Image (cartoon, rainbow, N blue to C red; front, side, top):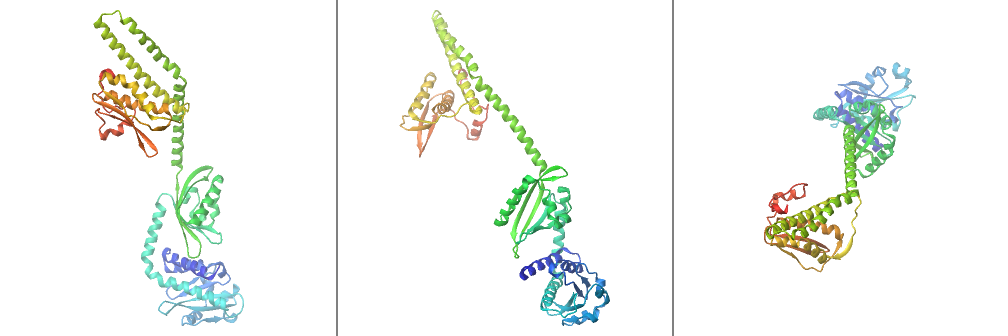
Length: 482
């Protein structure tokens, strides 16, 4: 590890200790415990008048008994060296043959403590030994200088920790080092409820967490993580975990950022969404069942269209034969009978158009009808539609006008005509007097077919109701036209 990276990591650990530990002595001990592996062969001790002795990992304070005079020498501002003949017996029993002490200076230039290092051979400190001692001295000075002013930070840290322990889900910090190593810096205690592991195990052994990810999701999860690590964009991933033989769905959301030492730190939250997934699957099953029922209905109507049209065709034949039998009736009765037959024919026309529309929709739903796109003249479409409704418009004394146009259209002429017929039918039916006008207007490369009438119209607040099934906005149609 390069020295600038070492300083950054150790200073970060020292600052974390200042914020998270309850006492200054605990903060000093946490800082000592964070020393990298290259300090392992140089056991260290810290002494301050207020905190007494604090030993590095694996070295009980009792082993350093007998160094008081030695440490007091360093407190005067000098580097003090003791070699084999003066090393205390407890240290000699552990193989120590030399030790030296260096002062810890505060910002104002006052000695506030001392650091002690030991070695297994009888020698004076080397330049590297002194560098390690000065590095540790700087860290200890950082803790001692900042501790008095960090009380609000410690209070805020405790509040955040308490919040993270009681909020739904799991709060974590995950670090990916520049050399490829990775692991959790922090994990809230909710992890046990989520995947059955305690937070300490997860921080100590990240593989124990990764082993619980469903095998089918591991590659996708890792690829997603690497992309976010490269882009430093907010990251979200949903994956499965195998917990006690059962599958749990987890939503993982975090924000990565790059630290000065080159590592990427992720701050995120894990949430159990198993119930949400189960509900989604239930909704999907219900949706599939509903769509299957709709398809079955559409298939039935599409298949039975011939059978459904036969009764109407039979009625048409019978009503077309009725005028022959009306000729022998008296004039007044023949007029009334003729009016009834005309109404019957109009009703059959309406019923036929309605049935055709329903069957066409069913065919579209079932995939049995596909639009056939072709080029055709707009004027022929307008003329044929208006011609079908001209008789009804004449009976109501309405002027039905199709505006002359030379535009060419590209669409399915059959389906487009049925849509136009529906608009014309409503316009003629609900217009009591005046006129109905049909035209085609160019809009760039597109064309709009418009139907205008002098009928009652639709109030603006009810325009949305037009697209609702089985809703009639205005009931002003004449009784004999319904």
